[in-house]
Length: 451
Image (tube, rainbow, N blue to C red; front, side, top):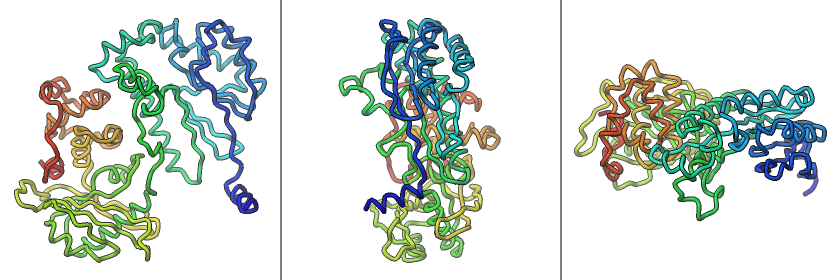
């Protein structure tokens, strides 16, 4: 067994070791020169709230002690680093630290910064990741949380603005890293947590000021992609082969479509709109090219499992939303779809059909307006960043109710919608007396895409 482990280690290469410390709060009792700890790895990551930058000389002395002991020291700024200063002054002091002659060769400031280890496949991305505070909690958060008293001129609005910038920076860099050839080990270092569960005491989870310190950006599966994207490509290629032969018009949408046109997100299944009825799609697709139907009671929707493995391992869920069903009001006629080249895991190079980016945006807007995952907000931002020229001229076609509910759920979307020329205040006014959309019903998805 040990011989097997040795072979695995040789194939993977050496795993760099990083020692992580945070929340030392050396400003309490001015412990900068007296606090000590054993070095247990070649790299040291100081993940924020180490001390206050206003204690510049003492803070610098502490870092000098660590640089002398480690191959490389990384510093992420916490909220307490800024106490006694305004935000921009704090950043200026942090940059000055990183340029000190005694530190510049051994200290890396991780303020929206990337570090590539020259001796291994390790990449570190780092930033504070200021959290997202719901707009209706601004008052209680600013009254309860010390940051808004001890960081000069600090406001919840500025807090959220920087959150959005940092989150966008993380996602773009993850996209670049995952798109690059070769395998990498990626460490994302932040001070504020990317999830609430498990990062606060249970009695504090529901406090209205908890969002000042953490944001739910990951689910229980972590930051990892839960199914290999190329496996989903296989299913999409197989779907296109069967339905194109039958002259069936289809358009893939949802999270997988966002990934296929350049986004970075977690995808578990393939969602598709088809210009047929449920009975027709079952008759055409079931038993063909590895597709097996999963019976559903709804008249507008049916699912399939696809696998090209003999034992049907690594099956992909394919959800088909049908254009034709009793009571259907909307048609795919005239809805543009694009044929996109994709690379499958086992089927190689192929193509499939995806809805136009504006319609993918419409679908994600509806999802963001309903209780769903954090990725809906990120997907909308990605779509605008890449396809604004397509989306902006048609924002008048978007549902004002969906816009209002989406902003209520994700405050950062207000900034995005304003950038598109949308009247955000009117959208919020339209839903001010409505807690949430009605429960899901047949045809809702089709309406969100086609209305």
